[in-house]
Image (cartoon, rainbow, N blue to C red):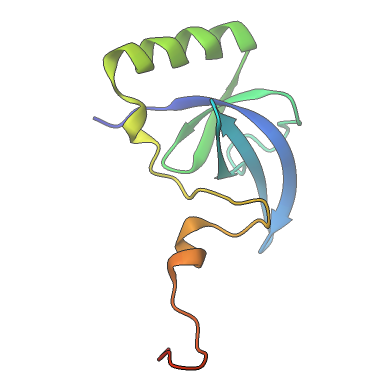
Length: 104
């Protein structure tokens, strides 16, 4: 099942000409595209589906939705790239880099 997960925008930035954000879901921070909700500001809550914020919601609605998804065991739907403190995504970190003893 594909669900939209609520999260809180912790920062916004431009990347390759697109408006992006770091969004917190519980204790996890993910990289999210804000192109569908370009007026979103830091501190607001958004519903995220496959890496795209699709709408803004208030904090109360975000909390209710997150709790309901947790009870249903549906938070595994967080399949959007995880961002570390350097701003690299999990996919970037998993990509082999050329170096001594490495091909690539």
